[in-house]
Image (spheres, rainbow, N blue to C red):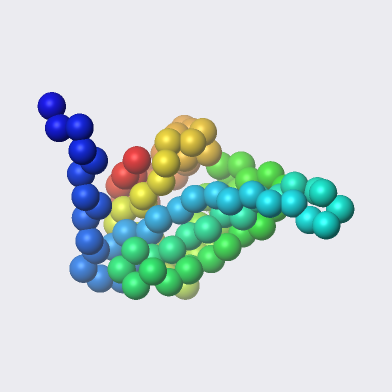
Length: 103
C-alpha cells in the first residue's frame, strides 16, 4: 500500500480543471463571512470570488453557472469533501454539465 499521496495531474489548457475552496474571516464588527474561491488550474487565474455569510450548494451552483457564461464549463473540478461539494445538489449539477469531480 502506497502511503504517499499521488501528485495532482497538470492541466494542458484553460478550462480543463478548476479548483474551488472556501475561506472565512470576520469584519471589524466581528461578523463572520465566507469567500468561495474558484481558480483555473492551468494558469492559476482567479475566475471568481463570491462573498457571503452563508454559501449553500444552491448558491455555489448558481455562481458557477454565471462563471460558465464567461469561461465555459470545466471538464473537471477539484474540491475537498466538504458537505457543500458532496451534496446531491452539487454532484447532480456537475453530472448534468458533464463535469468530473476530483476529491
